Length: 274
Image 1 (cartoon, helix red, strand yellow):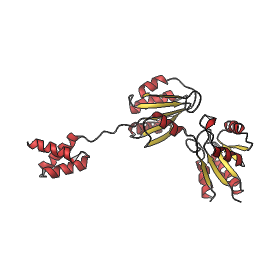
Image 2 (cartoon, rainbow, N blue to C red):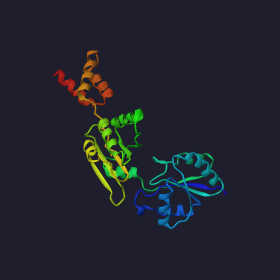
Image 3 (cartoon, one colour):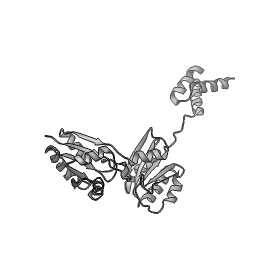
Image 4 (cartoon, helix red, strand yellow):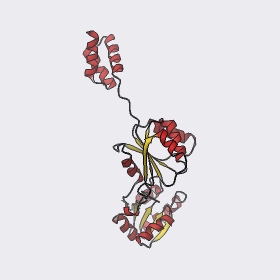
């Protein structure tokens, strides 16, 4: 009988967030592949579950993928977990999922806590549209490119930060985004010493210049997009009139090109003639 793969989210700090579905999945598992077997062993001990535990981290994911596939094909229920949160979200697991699915075996997800959505909610910048950048590259052109893109992003941006590199990341974000852009710094989310600080990037860079303890998630407020300029729209309409367009036609075309209200442009043109 064919097996299956269960991709399970685990608590990001508070064991009280363990769901009944996660408990059942780990209880029914024949083998659990974990990013850090020591941390997952603590979770299993808390749940009083005894199951085979195998490491699956970035360095051995390619080799472990074949092993997972063999286990599923032999009829086993296989669970993969990361240290915290959802596998594949800045964590290993993607190649395993692709391989099992492409082989025609069922893959299911057991949802759970997420540092990304938790931080977005705490920041209060809105969550209708946001992008997740994961960890910033450590150096080089790729880091510079990513910082530049974040500096121009008009959506909320979520970034994971190493506690040791938090100060350097915030300092570089100030350079890319300006010191006045708002940021929420979420540390130890859902844990006993949870901290959420919100304020300008420049203040955050000063406050968190030294290494901190615990996992950190940054949420940057979006760049406020500049609205269309009525003056530019009216100037465009005047240019169209100089080329022979009527007031009405010039106002309409300028409004279509700039996004400024046709009524605003038309009234300005009428005032010119008065």
